[in-house]
Image 1 (cartoon, rainbow, N blue to C red):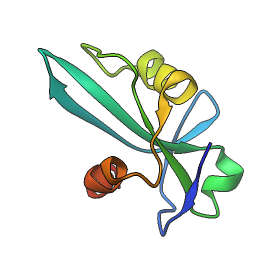
Image 2: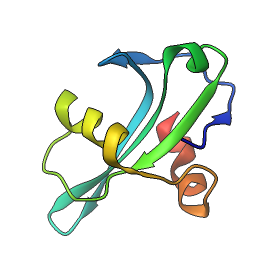
Image 3: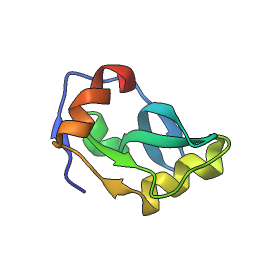
Image 4: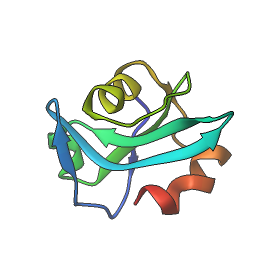
Amino acid sequence: MNSHKSKIRKYSTINRKAIAGVVLVPEKDYFRIYVAWEWPEAADSGFFAVMKSNKLYNCADEKTINAVCNFGDDITGTPEAKRIFHDLF
């Protein structure tokens, strides 16, 4: 994971992952999901990565968010991540 330092210190924990933000973007009658996450130890220091779902979803429940963290594409540091950054945090 390509985590970056941020000023964010607030997060929720899902499946032992520190989730700082989730964004759903409408796409073709479903949603593309973006998740800012890191392991709690790194999150406590303000590090987070931005993951993009590699498929479309119709909901964003705990299972879906965990799947994006585990199998999504790491877009941290890309122009796409910068466009949605303010929505994630």
